[in-house]
Amino acid sequence: MGSTVLSLRIDGELLDRLRQHAAKRGMSVQDYVVRTLIRDDFDERFTAAVEETEKFYGDSEETEKLYGDSEETEKLYGDSEEEPGPDGGVRYSLTPPVT
Image (cartoon, rainbow, N blue to C red; front, side, top):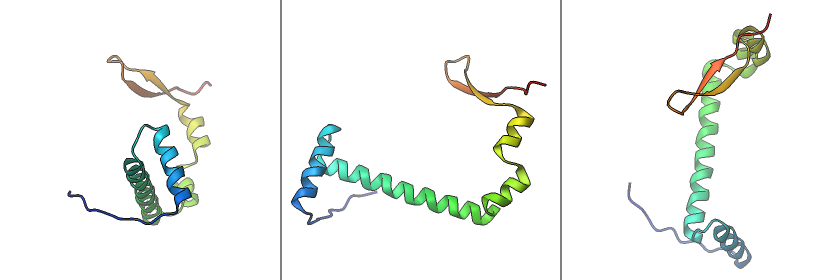
């Protein structure tokens, strides 16, 4: 993917705030703005994906009716906990419920 130049005219106060935010992170204003735009783009794409998933599977109330909510799942299967794996990575395991 290539890059393209984008020229912006912004308020001086906004530019000063952007400089401050970028300096806190040790970044140039350009890198800070690009990073912020990428994050915002990801958020929008993620939200769109969630909405598409809800359209496909139905809304969360219907999903809870079909698959149960997290409290019911927890009662059936117990809590999920992070445990260190043999290679030092994290693995997830289900703790059986206490009966």
